[in-house]
Amino acid sequence: MKSKSLILSALVAFAAFLPQSEAGIILGSADSFAVLGSSTVTSTGNTVLNGNLGVYPGSAITGFPPGIVNGTTYTGGAVAQQAQVDALAAYNILAGEVSIQNLTGQDLGGLTLVPGVRKFNTSAQLTGILTLDALGDINARFDFQIGSTLTTASGASVLLINGAQADNVFWQVGSSATLGTGTSFDGSILADQSITFNTGASLYGRALALNAAVTLDNNLITVPIPEPATFWAGAFCASVLGARQWLAVRRRKAGRS
Image (cartoon, rainbow, N blue to C red):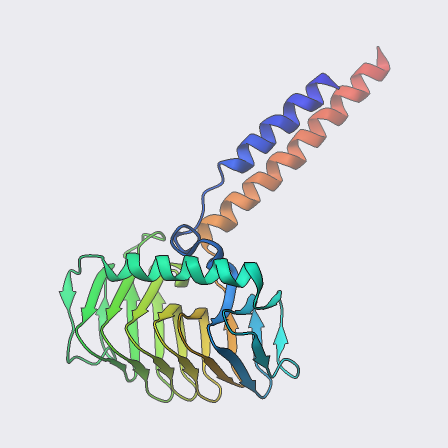
């Protein structure tokens, strides 16, 4: 029994040191939200959210059902309030970073970018494909500071290559974001005002609106699962199974003596 207690204590201590993802560190409790609105969240059609859904200080969420939430829905309340507090803190952190490149006036479509912070003094537009190349580093960050609006054209997309992770991509938007019809987008969008998804747009990330609504239309939004977290979770499970097997062997030996 003493050996079992020691092993369980060690496993609990190990779990406490499991590393958080970049999004988990930056976003705090907002990390688990696929969609977080301020005034309202409205959906048309068969939207699917793989993650939590919340609104604060408003309390109006419509369109679920027929929309599906594979997570928990918070209409106002303390959990959504804290998520908004943490999202605002993350927004301010991202806005205060020092950029390595100013892309004002350039369309993101057709660009291949390596890790770093990019800045748009005013609006940002994505037409076509934006490629984010992590250069083999799965922890590499891609942060975008956008002074006013973020807009994508119909069918626009973000391509992640060489280890780039959606969980490490952040879009700090000074006013509102609009994803065009059929857009396939990656990263966490933190908009000071509204976020609008046109028909069929998808997001592997989070839509966090600080002071206005999130509007959805037959969309798919999934909170990313970072690769490092998957590795450590597997390592932890393997440790638990190994400990159980070790205890079983000791019990069999003790029974023979």
